[in-house]
Amino acid sequence: MGRLRPYRGGAAVGILLSLAASAGGLVLPLLTRRLIDRVADGGDVTAPVLMTVGLLAGGAVAGAFGWFLLDRIAITLVRDARRSLLSRLLRVDARTVDRLQPGDLLARLTTDAAALHMLAVEVLAGVGTNLPVIAVAITLMAYLDPVLLAVTLAVSVAAGVIMHVLSPRVQRSSLAAQEAVGAMAAAIERAIGAIRTIRANGAEAAEEAHLHAAVGLACTEAVRTSAWSTVAARATGMTFQLAFVAVLAVGGARVATEQLTVGALVAFLLYVFYLVMPMQNLVGAVAAYRVGIASVTRMGEVLEYPAEPVHPAPGTVRGGAPLDVRFASVRFAYRPGEEVLRALSFTAPAGAVTAIVGRSGAGKSTVLDLIERFYDHSAGEILLGGRDVRDWPVAELRHAIGYVEQDSPVLAGTLRDNLLLGAPNAGEAEIREVLGRARLTDLVAGLPEGLDTVVGHRGSTLSGGERQRVAIARALLRKPRLLLLDEATSHLDAENEAALLESIRDIAGTATVVVVAHRSSTVRLADRIVVLDGGAARATGDHEELAAGDALYAELVATRLTP
Ligand SMILES: Nc1ncnc2c1ncn2[C@@H]1O[C@H](COP(=O)(O)OP(=O)(O)OP(=O)(O)O)[C@@H](O)[C@H]1O
Image 1 (cartoon, helix red, strand yellow):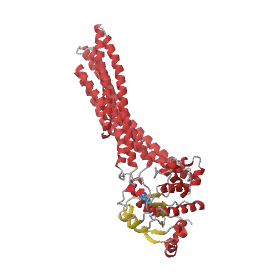
Image 2 (spheres, helix red, strand yellow; image 1 turned 180 degrees about the horizontal axis):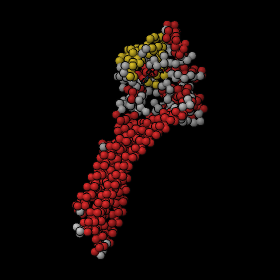
Image 3 (cartoon, protein in one colour; image 1 turned 135 degrees about the vertical axis):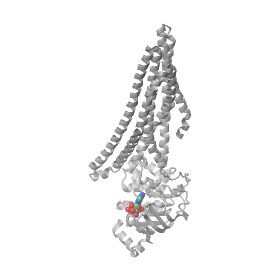
Image 4 (tube, helix red, strand yellow; image 1 turned 90 degrees about the vertical axis):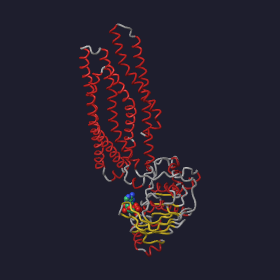
């Protein structure tokens, strides 16, 4: 409701216009009564006829404009909710990201947000205009004939009881239906994201069955919701018909005994008719409220995800002296009781290349994650440039670091978009320079639209090695004081490998480099190598020292590192 505050002016005008339209409608039965009574008396009907036409036309215009205003507010509310959710999602902490399903999140932002639209419209239009209309109609009905009103209300109570019983079921089934849509979206995202893997593994049939099951569940849950909503709508509709028949029967008897005029009975029946719409709207509003609340709950969950605080933007100045990194007895676990790092200590000197090696799963990438503060270590100290990473403002810390992930993500868009992601103010000369350093100049020259070439979803039109070099160029454009490079495990050809090594050597002149190494050529180039084992550094030294003095290192070079 708090989100409505900025729009209360527009909402008030919309509700007032809708009310004005409804008020016009409420007067119609009284005019009709006068019209009928005048005809019966043989009097002049010009004035009531003109007033009726005027009221109808005016009511239509006011009603349409009022509805439009309220609908526009509902659409704007959905926009605000989506923006809040997206702002949150961009900052959700890494542990939560690990368990999120992108497809489900997409469903929360699309179908759930659409249900929020319905909810907002129903609450604004339904409660804002229908309740007052019902109240006035009942007052006018009491004025016309209290006995008939009592008959109407007695039957209406039945509608209330039916809604009371059915609406929790509508809500439960709606929540299940929205969750099924979320699960379906997650399944679709999983399949589309790995379409080649699925085909290469001949897993189309199994995946098809999985997708069909997810789509089937979404259908079953939607049908269940439809069944409950339909039962609720029909049952209440039936009670209104019953009210109409009851009023006709009792009213007819009262006309026969001359306790009521024909005009008053017709007017009363028109009010019963008139009540049907707002009453059904109200019932619809309760149902939409139940569906909407289920969706709002799912959207609200996103806003509750733990997130990194909003960091003030760091200065736009890039560059600076290389920063050294020091790990002192660092401990860290992704899951309680399963420590990945146990008392890890090592130093990466400023301006040097430090390689981290170890068996798969030893915790090498984790070291980079802790420096970036994607996760926080549980004990020990991590110092960057002599300052505890926890004392660095996070935005400034990341501003000083260039980070190249193992799978080098490239975003959909142009090459230029990708390069400028972390340094939007970089100039053309700087871009050309980093393209050279990342050995991308020839590639860009060969592209039809150069830097403005679109690289496809996740950079799918580039090779693995090219994606990695784009990621390196992007990191370099930030003029990092520390470059974290998680070397791709995939094999590079000799030319690309030599290019990459040259780039790293180049970079070491201006930044500290910490590289998770998977190639023996990289470790040979490193000034210092840290061998990770059992969550700690079991040995540190250069290639020659370690090859001679550390059995695990010798084994890694012989068996695991790509020659
Ligand atoms: N986000 C995560 N949540 C839970 N466990 C994780 C997560 N990321 C990694 N792990 C686990 O932590 C351990 C260390 O992972 P890490 O990615 O740091 O290893 P690595 O040495 O870089 O491996 P590789 O050489 O295969 O890339 C592994 O056992 C891995 O399964």
